[in-house]
Length: 108
Image 1: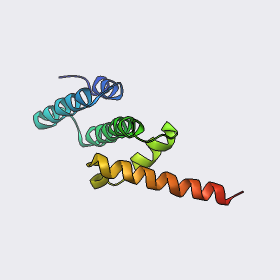
Image 2 (image 1 turned 60 degrees about the horizontal axis):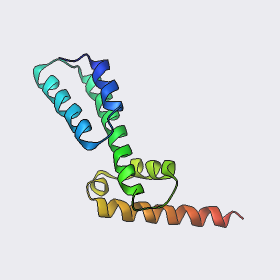
Image 3 (image 1 turned 90 degrees about the vertical axis):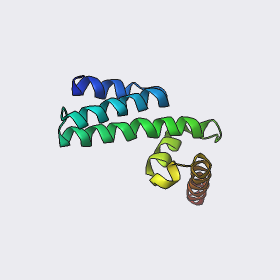
Image 4 (image 1 turned 45 degrees about the horizontal axis):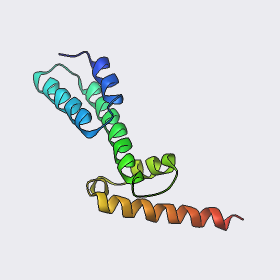
């Protein structure tokens, strides 16, 4: 079984869905066998969502023209049910970007 730190580092370096899901499967196997602690499960979950949000933001950025960091921030704050549907997520990001533009323009 992989050391926990190695698994976390490989998860953070994931560049696509397949690598991320492979890391999640490996972690799930480790949990079932009792190799990882509850604290490690929390840390892996945080890492998993950080990488998943980045992958989702990459997908949204292909459709929505905006600052990548803004998109990542918006995606990470979206609810899980919105994140599960790409169409809803793109619509959500567009709506949030419009709202942000309105607030920024209102300051002038």
